[in-house]
Length: 105
Image 1 (cartoon, rainbow, N blue to C red):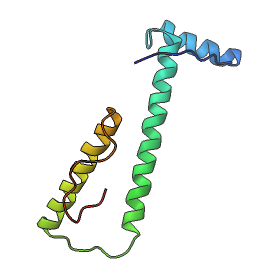
Image 2 (cartoon, rainbow, N blue to C red; image 1 turned 180 degrees about the vertical axis):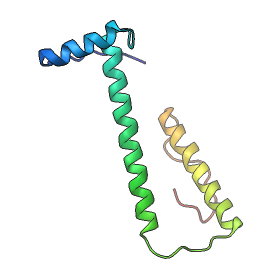
Image 3 (spheres, rainbow, N blue to C red; image 1 turned 90 degrees about the vertical axis):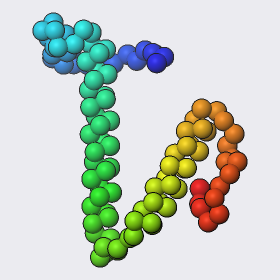
């Protein structure tokens, strides 16, 4: 992963706190400490989005019965979409070469 720099201004008390965390051995550098805080924030926000989506689903109305066949079709479409998007991320052609009849991208 390519690293870049970011200068951060902190009040003295916060700077001393970060330095104390590094001194006690919890982190090897102040940068490592800040990276970990950012990662934890990213995880927390992803969890919030997931919980929001789950609540939206629960509140969307009565449950609908879906057969094993329908789940298999849905799984296949999601796998195809994932492969397609992974290919785009890797710089492959942006249009899929084969899309099964009736599927949506």
